[in-house]
Length: 99
Image (cartoon, rainbow, N blue to C red):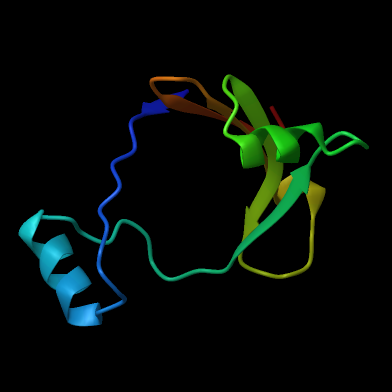
């Protein structure tokens, strides 16, 4: 399970050079090659997960199927991701189809 804290950095407007300079100054590097990311989000019939997220209510969970590459969905190549938001942090659990 991944536990992470998010840090947000506001920029006055989209200025590519300013963002690139900031990323470079923080020693950030590209982790993955460019790729297509596909997601199917899962929710209740009353959209309870969406409503909790819109209101910023914690704790809450978000469920999605995710796969990379081709646009065509293949369940055996997908990952179920469960993202949990808490007051102080967020967690993500990834479960491969064959697990």
